[in-house]
Image (cartoon, rainbow, N blue to C red; front, side, top):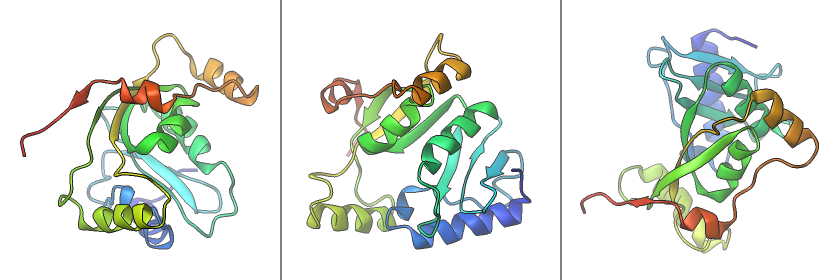
Length: 178
């Protein structure tokens, strides 16, 4: 469902505030979304955007949503709307997007101090034992030769692509200057 940019931005903001993992989602103002294609679930609780260059951004799910597989639904919707690249935190999201036909191609180590909200989220997750270490940031692109129809068929049959931590750790690691 397409929605006005102010409505999308408000739903995104509400989802970020409601979700314990909200700091990992890109905030976007209506002005920043001006040239993007935005889409939202019928209940207004999940959505995403695709920028003109194909970058998938601002993917969200409100913690109050009753939708169980919103991440997959949004990933497929993003591809339908021209999404062909994205970045995300950690293996869970990599495997969510992989089931929709995306593949990880590189990663960078988490960098403290860039996003204080995300730093607090990561510290909480480590202290609560949810994650053992800060998550890598993965860069993904559409899998060559895998159509949207094929990815959807594989997902429906329970054969969606998944990447082990071993495979993810073998991806090229790009490190910036400290």
